Length: 259
Image (cartoon, helix red, strand yellow):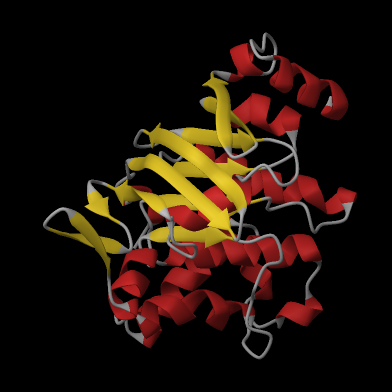
Protein backbone atom coordinates (compact mmCIF):
# COMPACT_ATOMS: atom_id res chain seq x y z
CA UNK A 1 0.00 0.00 0.00
CA UNK A 2 1.40 3.37 -0.97
CA UNK A 3 0.43 6.97 -0.40
CA UNK A 4 1.20 7.89 -3.99
CA UNK A 5 -2.25 6.77 -5.19
CA UNK A 6 -4.15 9.20 -2.95
CA UNK A 7 -6.69 11.26 -4.88
CA UNK A 8 -6.01 14.94 -4.23
CA UNK A 9 -8.99 16.92 -3.00
CA UNK A 10 -10.57 20.23 -3.97
CA UNK A 11 -11.19 22.50 -0.97
CA UNK A 12 -13.75 25.31 -1.15
CA UNK A 13 -14.34 27.90 1.58
CA UNK A 14 -17.54 29.88 1.02
CA UNK A 15 -18.07 33.29 2.71
CA UNK A 16 -16.84 32.05 6.11
CA UNK A 17 -17.26 34.29 9.15
CA UNK A 18 -16.17 33.37 12.67
CA UNK A 19 -16.51 35.31 15.93
CA UNK A 20 -15.04 34.67 19.35
CA UNK A 21 -17.42 36.70 21.46
CA UNK A 22 -17.43 40.16 19.88
CA UNK A 23 -14.11 39.61 18.11
CA UNK A 24 -14.48 38.73 14.44
CA UNK A 25 -11.66 36.31 13.57
CA UNK A 26 -12.72 35.48 10.00
CA UNK A 27 -14.53 38.07 7.92
CA UNK A 28 -16.08 36.67 4.77
CA UNK A 29 -13.29 34.35 3.60
CA UNK A 30 -13.68 32.80 0.13
CA UNK A 31 -10.98 30.41 -1.02
CA UNK A 32 -10.77 27.60 -3.57
CA UNK A 33 -7.81 25.23 -3.53
CA UNK A 34 -7.47 23.03 -6.57
CA UNK A 35 -6.52 19.34 -6.43
CA UNK A 36 -2.79 18.92 -5.82
CA UNK A 37 -2.23 22.62 -5.22
CA UNK A 38 0.19 23.76 -2.51
CA UNK A 39 -1.25 26.85 -0.85
CA UNK A 40 0.76 28.73 1.76
CA UNK A 41 -1.15 31.06 4.10
CA UNK A 42 0.76 34.02 5.50
CA UNK A 43 -0.23 36.81 7.83
CA UNK A 44 0.52 38.46 11.16
CA UNK A 45 -0.27 36.80 14.48
CA UNK A 46 -3.99 36.90 15.21
CA UNK A 47 -4.95 37.39 11.57
CA UNK A 48 -7.14 34.25 11.43
CA UNK A 49 -4.76 31.83 9.69
CA UNK A 50 -4.98 28.98 12.19
CA UNK A 51 -8.71 29.50 12.69
CA UNK A 52 -9.22 29.12 8.94
CA UNK A 53 -7.49 25.73 8.99
CA UNK A 54 -9.54 24.63 11.99
CA UNK A 55 -12.75 25.66 10.23
CA UNK A 56 -11.80 23.60 7.17
CA UNK A 57 -11.81 20.36 9.20
CA UNK A 58 -14.59 21.59 11.53
CA UNK A 59 -12.52 21.77 14.70
CA UNK A 60 -14.09 25.24 14.70
CA UNK A 61 -17.64 25.76 13.46
CA UNK A 62 -18.14 28.77 11.16
CA UNK A 63 -20.83 31.20 12.32
CA UNK A 64 -21.67 32.06 8.71
CA UNK A 65 -20.67 30.21 5.54
CA UNK A 66 -19.48 26.68 4.91
CA UNK A 67 -16.62 24.51 3.69
CA UNK A 68 -16.69 21.68 1.18
CA UNK A 69 -14.08 19.10 0.25
CA UNK A 70 -14.57 17.43 -3.13
CA UNK A 71 -18.07 18.90 -3.14
CA UNK A 72 -19.06 17.38 0.22
CA UNK A 73 -20.10 19.81 2.93
CA UNK A 74 -17.90 19.50 6.02
CA UNK A 75 -19.57 19.30 9.42
CA UNK A 76 -23.04 20.14 8.16
CA UNK A 77 -25.79 18.96 5.83
CA UNK A 78 -28.48 20.87 3.98
CA UNK A 79 -32.06 20.72 5.26
CA UNK A 80 -34.13 22.88 3.00
CA UNK A 81 -32.68 26.38 3.20
CA UNK A 82 -30.66 25.68 6.35
CA UNK A 83 -27.43 23.95 7.28
CA UNK A 84 -27.67 21.46 10.14
CA UNK A 85 -24.74 20.15 12.18
CA UNK A 86 -23.78 16.55 11.50
CA UNK A 87 -23.39 14.03 14.30
CA UNK A 88 -19.99 13.91 15.99
CA UNK A 89 -19.46 10.45 14.51
CA UNK A 90 -20.09 11.72 10.98
CA UNK A 91 -17.78 14.70 11.55
CA UNK A 92 -15.02 12.40 12.81
CA UNK A 93 -15.40 10.29 9.67
CA UNK A 94 -14.98 13.41 7.52
CA UNK A 95 -11.91 14.49 9.49
CA UNK A 96 -10.36 11.14 8.65
CA UNK A 97 -10.14 12.38 5.05
CA UNK A 98 -8.55 15.70 6.05
CA UNK A 99 -5.07 15.34 7.52
CA UNK A 100 -4.05 17.87 10.17
CA UNK A 101 -0.50 18.49 11.45
CA UNK A 102 -0.50 20.65 14.58
CA UNK A 103 2.17 22.99 15.95
CA UNK A 104 2.80 20.83 19.01
CA UNK A 105 2.81 17.31 17.51
CA UNK A 106 -0.06 15.91 19.68
CA UNK A 107 1.41 12.40 19.73
CA UNK A 108 0.21 9.79 22.23
CA UNK A 109 3.04 9.63 24.81
CA UNK A 110 2.21 6.06 25.89
CA UNK A 111 2.41 4.63 22.35
CA UNK A 112 5.49 3.83 20.30
CA UNK A 113 6.18 5.75 17.12
CA UNK A 114 4.87 2.79 15.10
CA UNK A 115 1.62 2.60 17.07
CA UNK A 116 1.10 6.37 16.94
CA UNK A 117 1.04 6.14 13.15
CA UNK A 118 -0.95 2.88 12.98
CA UNK A 119 -3.59 3.89 15.54
CA UNK A 120 -5.98 5.88 13.34
CA UNK A 121 -6.38 3.34 10.49
CA UNK A 122 -7.17 0.68 13.11
CA UNK A 123 -9.53 2.88 15.14
CA UNK A 124 -11.51 3.86 12.05
CA UNK A 125 -11.75 0.27 10.87
CA UNK A 126 -9.96 0.97 7.61
CA UNK A 127 -7.15 -1.50 8.24
CA UNK A 128 -6.41 -4.41 10.53
CA UNK A 129 -3.54 -4.07 12.98
CA UNK A 130 -1.01 -5.96 10.84
CA UNK A 131 -1.84 -3.96 7.71
CA UNK A 132 -1.80 -0.69 9.64
CA UNK A 133 1.63 -1.43 11.07
CA UNK A 134 2.91 -2.33 7.61
CA UNK A 135 1.65 1.03 6.31
CA UNK A 136 3.11 2.81 9.35
CA UNK A 137 6.55 1.33 8.65
CA UNK A 138 6.33 2.48 5.04
CA UNK A 139 5.34 6.00 6.06
CA UNK A 140 7.97 6.25 8.78
CA UNK A 141 10.54 5.24 6.18
CA UNK A 142 9.24 7.98 3.94
CA UNK A 143 9.84 10.62 6.65
CA UNK A 144 13.28 9.22 7.51
CA UNK A 145 12.40 7.43 10.74
CA UNK A 146 12.48 3.76 9.75
CA UNK A 147 14.98 3.07 12.54
CA UNK A 148 12.84 4.62 15.31
CA UNK A 149 9.63 2.58 15.09
CA UNK A 150 9.98 1.25 18.64
CA UNK A 151 10.82 4.60 20.25
CA UNK A 152 8.40 6.63 22.35
CA UNK A 153 7.75 10.32 21.64
CA UNK A 154 9.76 11.46 24.70
CA UNK A 155 12.82 9.76 23.19
CA UNK A 156 12.65 11.85 20.01
CA UNK A 157 13.70 15.38 19.14
CA UNK A 158 11.00 17.91 18.29
CA UNK A 159 11.80 17.57 14.60
CA UNK A 160 11.48 13.80 14.77
CA UNK A 161 8.17 14.08 16.64
CA UNK A 162 6.81 16.41 13.98
CA UNK A 163 7.89 13.98 11.25
CA UNK A 164 5.98 11.23 13.09
CA UNK A 165 2.97 13.55 13.18
CA UNK A 166 3.22 14.00 9.40
CA UNK A 167 3.40 10.21 8.92
CA UNK A 168 0.34 9.87 11.16
CA UNK A 169 -1.57 12.41 9.07
CA UNK A 170 -0.70 10.42 5.93
CA UNK A 171 -1.83 7.11 7.45
CA UNK A 172 -5.51 7.80 6.73
CA UNK A 173 -4.67 8.59 3.09
CA UNK A 174 -6.28 12.06 3.18
CA UNK A 175 -7.10 14.03 0.07
CA UNK A 176 -5.82 17.20 1.73
CA UNK A 177 -3.38 17.89 4.56
CA UNK A 178 -3.51 21.03 6.70
CA UNK A 179 -0.30 22.21 8.39
CA UNK A 180 -0.69 24.72 11.22
CA UNK A 181 2.74 26.36 11.64
CA UNK A 182 4.45 22.95 11.66
CA UNK A 183 7.90 24.34 12.54
CA UNK A 184 6.97 27.04 15.07
CA UNK A 185 7.58 24.82 18.13
CA UNK A 186 10.97 23.60 16.88
CA UNK A 187 14.48 24.73 17.68
CA UNK A 188 15.94 26.49 14.61
CA UNK A 189 18.37 23.66 13.79
CA UNK A 190 15.45 21.19 13.54
CA UNK A 191 13.27 23.22 11.18
CA UNK A 192 15.00 22.05 7.99
CA UNK A 193 14.30 18.34 8.52
CA UNK A 194 10.56 18.96 8.81
CA UNK A 195 10.46 21.34 5.84
CA UNK A 196 12.30 18.72 3.76
CA UNK A 197 9.51 16.21 4.43
CA UNK A 198 6.84 18.75 3.48
CA UNK A 199 8.75 19.59 0.30
CA UNK A 200 8.69 15.90 -0.62
CA UNK A 201 4.93 15.85 -0.04
CA UNK A 202 4.53 18.96 -2.18
CA UNK A 203 5.85 17.05 -5.18
CA UNK A 204 3.57 14.04 -4.58
CA UNK A 205 0.34 15.63 -5.82
CA UNK A 206 -1.39 15.85 -2.43
CA UNK A 207 -3.39 19.02 -1.79
CA UNK A 208 -1.60 20.99 0.94
CA UNK A 209 -2.61 24.09 2.92
CA UNK A 210 0.27 25.36 5.04
CA UNK A 211 0.24 28.16 7.60
CA UNK A 212 3.85 29.20 8.12
CA UNK A 213 6.18 32.14 8.74
CA UNK A 214 8.93 30.53 6.65
CA UNK A 215 8.93 32.94 3.70
CA UNK A 216 11.80 31.29 1.82
CA UNK A 217 10.04 27.94 2.13
CA UNK A 218 6.81 29.47 0.82
CA UNK A 219 8.66 30.92 -2.15
CA UNK A 220 10.18 27.53 -2.95
CA UNK A 221 7.18 25.20 -2.73
CA UNK A 222 3.95 27.20 -2.98
CA UNK A 223 1.79 27.23 -6.08
CA UNK A 224 -0.12 30.05 -4.43
CA UNK A 225 0.46 32.37 -1.49
CA UNK A 226 -2.55 33.74 0.39
CA UNK A 227 -2.04 36.76 2.66
CA UNK A 228 -4.59 37.18 5.45
CA UNK A 229 -4.94 40.16 7.78
CA UNK A 230 -7.82 41.06 10.08
CA UNK A 231 -9.68 37.89 9.11
CA UNK A 232 -9.77 38.83 5.41
CA UNK A 233 -7.83 37.60 2.40
CA UNK A 234 -5.96 40.74 1.37
CA UNK A 235 -4.31 39.26 -1.71
CA UNK A 236 -3.33 35.96 -3.24
CA UNK A 237 -1.37 34.72 -6.21
CA UNK A 238 1.87 33.01 -7.21
CA UNK A 239 4.84 33.57 -4.86
CA UNK A 240 6.55 35.64 -7.55
CA UNK A 241 3.69 38.14 -7.33
CA UNK A 242 2.65 38.18 -3.67
CA UNK A 243 6.16 37.92 -2.18
CA UNK A 244 8.14 39.88 -4.76
CA UNK A 245 5.60 42.40 -6.07
CA UNK A 246 2.82 42.70 -3.48
CA UNK A 247 0.01 44.99 -4.54
CA UNK A 248 -1.37 45.90 -1.13
CA UNK A 249 0.25 48.11 1.47
CA UNK A 250 -0.61 45.70 4.30
CA UNK A 251 1.16 42.87 2.49
CA UNK A 252 4.20 45.04 1.83
CA UNK A 253 4.30 46.14 5.47
CA UNK A 254 4.09 42.54 6.73
CA UNK A 255 6.81 41.31 4.38
CA UNK A 256 9.11 44.22 5.29
CA UNK A 257 9.03 43.00 8.91
CA UNK A 258 9.64 39.27 8.24
CA UNK A 259 12.05 39.30 5.30
